[in-house]
Length: 279
View 1 (tube, helix red, strand yellow):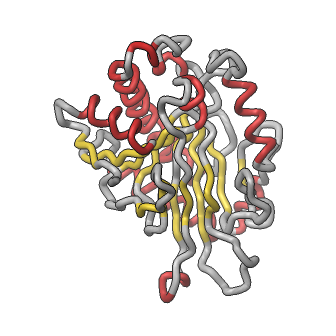
View 2 (cartoon, helix red, strand yellow; view 1 turned 180 degrees about the vertical axis):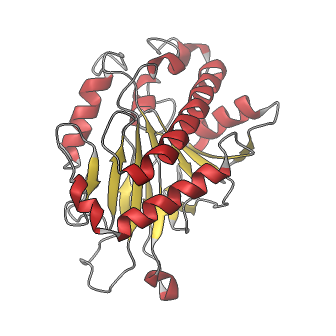
View 3 (spheres, rainbow, N blue to C red; view 1 turned 180 degrees about the horizontal axis):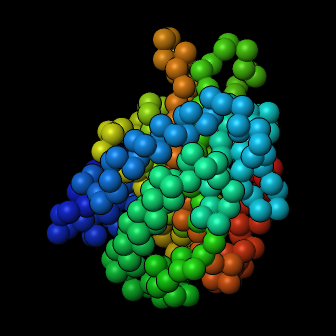
């Protein structure tokens, strides 16, 4: 099984994209509407931020959930005991942000969110009738006026050889939200597990955006769309001496959105944050 590359401009894109999510929970989108210069500039300003001592002025706030998470705090993937080898920053539109990063990050956030709304509409329109009947409202309506959609700016530092045994840049996990949009990272390493438990390399191209199903879309579709496990491997050789940057947008529903008989947007989010140690 391969991860499909979908041409956003194709007339068949909505159906092909939805089919890809059903098959493996992942798709790669080319010729998308997010300006590449926004992606490049955002990587640049956050790379400078992670290299500076300024990051210590924005310590993570467990109540507002914004700010800088150090390598020492990091997060531990659900079902794992060892922290990931990374540091990151949670950016919300109404949250804290260093002045040097705010303008371009806000622009990228808005561009990605607009694209994400279109993708959700594609999924809604191309889902089987019995699956659509499970949605408490159109998928794109679930994200309207939501304050929990978040852009996570991630820095994976060069490896030193002193990392904890078994630690990965990002251990196998599933995302919490509805959809995740990931502009191509600055280096490879992302893998996704297929239905036969094989790990597949996710293709990387500077002009592509990777999209994956997350737990909340799996939940509200009655598990029709799979929230697929994925991970970031540790590089070897000379590549181990290099940093890696990525910046996934985690698209969330409002608190009051009913996902299923057992969960709202709020209850599922709080449960998962507690499980990964960020609550």
